[in-house]
Each structure stands twice: as C-alpha cells, then as structure tokens.
Length: 426
Ligand code: IMP
Image (cartoon, rainbow, N blue to C red; front, side, top):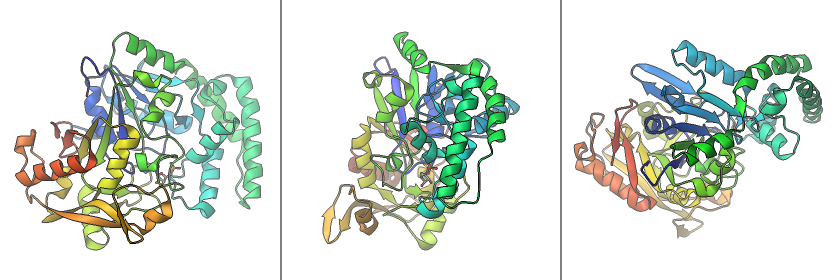
C-alpha cells in the first residue's frame, strides 16, 4: 500500500469488526514511521501473534510491536486511562520497550468508570449487545459538550471540578434509569490524580505530530477499529458503535485534513462474523456455523462472547467499498475455509419479494433480507503454507477472484494464518 505516492494509508474493517486489522497493521507497520489509532476505545481488541507470543491490544496501536515505530492515540479515540496504563504495563512486562514511542492526544475524551456503569445499565433496556466498556456514554458526553478530555485530567484542579460534576450527573441519570448502582466520587478523584500525572508527559497536540511527519515525507498508517457495518452513520443502526468507523473518520480522529490521505485498505474475512446484536443476513446456523466458529476461533477478543458466523456477504463488502472509498482489500482467514466442500457466497438479497444487491438503510428490512447464494467449489487442502498466489489451489484463487469481482476493489493481501509470515502480497 505504501510507495512514493502513498505516504498516508488508512486501514479499516469492512464488515462487522474482528476482520484481522491488527495483523495487517502489524505487517504494514514494518514499512511505516507512525501508526495512529483514531476512533473507538477499549471496545476494540486487536490480536497480533509474533513468534509464539500473543499480544492483545485494546487501545494502543498495533504498530507498537515494532521497535522503530512511533504510535499515537488520536483525538477521535475515547481513552479509558485505567485500562490504557494496564495495557502499557503489560506490554512492558512482555519485553516491549515503549519509552518515547507513544503519544496521546490532549483532545481525546476520557472513558471513566461512570461511563461503564451507564453503558451496563443502559444495556438492560436497549440491548445493543455492547462490549460494556462505556463507549456510547463517553461519546454522548463528547457530543453533548460535557466530556472530560485528556488535557483536563492533566490539570489537577480542573479535573477535580469536572469529575465532581460528571459523577453527580451520572448518578442522577442512574437514579432516573431506576438502577441501584452509583458512581463513587472518591474513586474518580483518586483515578484522576493517579493517572493525570502519568498521562501528562505523553500528552500533546498529536494532529501536529502527524501533520509534521507527513510534511517530512514520513509514512503514516491510520488504524481503524471495529468495522463499517458498526459505523454510527453507515452501519446497521441502532446496532452500531458510537463512532465513525469508516475511513472518513480517520482524518477527523487523527487531526489531519482529508486531502492528506492517499489510500484506504479494507480488511475483510473470507467469510463473515458478528458479535453483539443486530442483523447478520448470511448467518450459517447449525453445525456449519459451529464449524466456522471453531475453525476460526471466533470468540470476542474483548468480551470472550462467541461470534455469530456466516458466509461472505458481497452486498456488505460492496457497500463498504463505497462508503469507505476503499482502494484495496485484504482478505483474512482464507485457511479457515480449507475443509469445506462448497462455499456459499451471497451476491444479493431478496427483500419482500424483490431482489437487490444494495444494502438497505432500514435495519428491519435487513432483518428480513434472504441472501441469494452462489455456491463456489472448495479447495479441500491445507493452504497455511502458501506464500504467493501461485501456491494456492486453483479453487482458492477462483474464490478470491469472485470475491474481488463482487466487491469491486482489488485484493492486495491474503492471509492464511495468524503468523506474520502467513500473508500473501498479491
Ligand atoms: P460498543 O462499541 O461497546 O458500544 O458496542 C456496540 C456494538 O459494536 C456491539 O454490537 C459490539 O459487539 C460491537 N463492537 C464494538 N467493538 C467491537 C469490536 O472491536 N469488534 C467487533 N464488534 C465490536
């Protein structure tokens, strides 16, 4: 994705999240100077396998595993300071030296314990199937202009006042919602004092850092979290997360202008999964779904919940190509399909008697959509050793060709396993 004309590339999920963005970012980071997370928060879970070591990153960009790469948590992220530092310390314990390589935007908003409490209590009636990490309530406070930002936490006096107001408001809301739980002011004040002091030395105007790096001809990778179908505008609303997960959010959340971005890589699984509530038209169901789940290890990285599994949904990916402006695709987990005799691929839907290849905006229509499947021949061979397209069986190549045609964007990478070397550049 990077060359003389492409210095700033966005990597996004093009389905419902969990497509394997962490692995792609880890591999691309080798050619990158700066990796920036630009939205979401601790709801994300990026798994990266290096040798026999597993790293699970929730808030720190996946580029951190490369010693020469600098990383940024951008202004569009909602930062949970407690789990952020726990993650940082865990990486240190695993031998990753972070000193001087990680910066946090002074403009990023905070996720506090009262946001998590509100998220969990709201779930009792709303049933979005959130991760319970406080993401929705934190973004609500941001848009409602009552959020607390990283810069605020770094100033002890201001932080005390804002935390006191935030806890009081959260408790009023909890009472209104009929919940018995209450946020504890002392706990919040102690957290503010402890973590504000830790955040201050790594906090800056990160948009300026990204802008300067690009002016100097450095390579910048903007790392998305979740996936297009969870985007607050373009996803299966209301069963979405509370941020702009599509590439358009990358400029806003990294603090640069949209004209700085040179390319957008969309990561897709060779099939489809979803965790949390909301429609999943190509759900496999029954034994086939269980087989996909077991073979793909499809359990949530953040919550451990089993993911619903189904077949590749071309209307979803084609829509994702459109709303993200994808210039390339990375197809992950192709090896999970190794044992299937035939593999269904949805080319369109039948909705209320009519056929369509487009994604309906109305989630109730999508609930009723019946996929129109095309059966592709399986390859029934182990492909985990493939390192070039030529190493793949003809049926696997035909499968990829068909996905590419249906999606309308070129496949640039194919991954056939969790290790760094199990990736094919096309
Ligand atoms: P929230 O982001 O915790 O508010 O959850 C909203 C919806 O997004 C739920 O369906 C979650 O399961 C889903 N979600 C949030 N983060 C991720 C992710 O990283 N991968 C997959 N689904 C996610």
